[in-house]
Image (cartoon, rainbow over the protein chains, first blue to last red):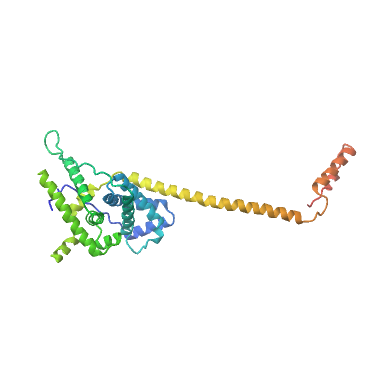
Amino acid sequence: MSRIPQRFAPVVRIEIGEDDERALIARVLAGDREAFGAIVERYAAQARRVARAVLRDPDDADDAAQDAFLSAFVRLERYDPTRAFGPWLMRIVANAATDRRRRRAVRAAEPLPMEVVARDGRPDREAERSLLSGRLRAALEELAPRRRLTVVLFDAEGYSHAEIAEILGVPEGTVRSDVFLARRRLRELLGSWKEGVE
Amino acid sequence: MTDFVRRLDRRRDRELGAALARALATHDEAAFVARVVARLDARRVAAAWETLAGWAGRGVAAAVLVVLLSGLAARSQPASGPSLDTALVGIESRLLLEPATPDAGLLLELPTGP
């Protein structure tokens, strides 16, 4: 794959103690509103990114993520506390986003930004980042929805193949295959873009 | 080739992951969290009103039933002595006919029971 600039900071996935999380969930079940807020705060960024992977429009993605949190609250009694909470929640997020996508008409793709050059002729770094992000989002749109979700859950959010299989309700082998094929396609799309820019 | 692919796929591509996270980045998490919690609160209030409305309906029905049953019970009981109204009319008559100074004994004639 064409090398992506190192200046992008790696995603730091905050590992919360499982005991802390179980205690929070128990408090939510007991009606503790603040505990629910803490759970939302913990997973908000991840849920919004996953929803955005499915729904290109950020507002739609946020609506889907909100629906997912409320749905998770209603179903919390059915959650098995012996299993990790993240995959359980992300399954609800993925389903909520997918449902919303099916209901909505396909929106016209936003025009891709061309190379942006600062007034002094030097490339604007922030603009370059923005350009790459826009190109990545467009490239993600080229992928089938499930492959898009898979590569985001694996490489961006750090879930394992087994966890993603649980989230998407597919065999683990399918997840491995999806990750491989998604990465290959992204490489092709971004590689052709890089050749065009350089 | 298959084994090689399998080994590669186990490792997370951190560069790609960082780029994807940046491409999909969201902002203003605090506002998002507040909106979610507010929606939960609104849902709880709506659910509480629904419960109250359900109980109100049942409460009205119960109150009507109590009134009906009380009325039936009152009608079925025989008269046990002069009613309060009858006694008061008697006292008023005596006050009009007798001297101005009221007799405290009149008050003692008031029936004590129904």
